[in-house]
Length: 375
Image (tube, rainbow, N blue to C red; front, side, top):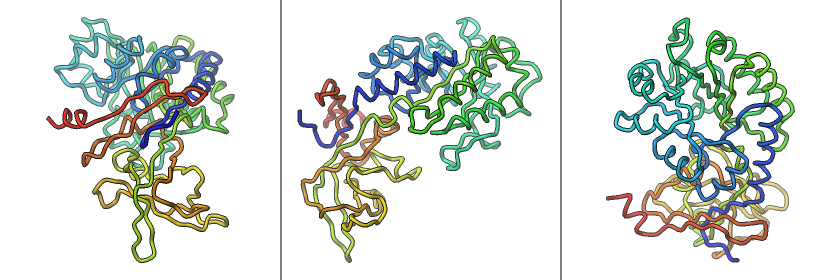
């Protein structure tokens, strides 16, 4: 079956392969690994994911509703701040709910105590291997979680859990260090609470990731604190290398010897991390660096009016032509959840395909989708 252009294409068999690995790690280590919707929220895939995962985590009421409705589980919830008019609903449906600050925990105490919600507090252990500030939550002056000097010597009354999240597409050694730093700073809390959420960023499905080290590390944590439920909530790991974005060359602009392929997608609208991180996505059949055998250089241009909506040169084996197809690899995570309709640029279809390449799910976007966003 021919694929639409542009389209985010999700491959069921590859998602299932990742889920099987994650499920094996959870079973071997005795922890609970759940999906973080901030990285992937395409709910037609939730029935597949629910075969392997005990749940999912939300950072807003909308995400929590999506989990409850389409994942069929009570959501785990953490938000940097809660809206007063929404708190009753979100606390009432939560499996666990984490507060960002002690002040919010106390502000809503009457409600969560009455509802019997299992509440936790986010701590900032001031460790992260992430070097890009935009994605590093551990700054001691930051807004995400309480640092050690702010905490009372004993957990606040009714506190059931501790939440730390400082990783981003990190390896098993970083998880081990995060646990060491958490124990060093918050060990007196771990002795008294019921659960520890180690957040996301555990990229256990990436090639070369040391899953055995991760399993040993988590087992040791469980041996040290046998009373704790330990939770990991990666997002990217579940759909790492399981999808791509296909698009078409609509025009070629030449100025002063520099050629730009004009595509029917936008980097700022559909692949914002390529500009924000920034990072160089893999383009199928092309090279991001100049090398022998790839003599044809083209910048890649998005279709929005933003001047910076482009990527610097990629190198191809053949000259490009209008009508050519380009494929951006590994576009399942942090794409559809962050994409926009800025400038009225059409949103790519989202399709899921089976092992035979047949489309099993499809979401298309049209003018009414744009109109509803604007009024």
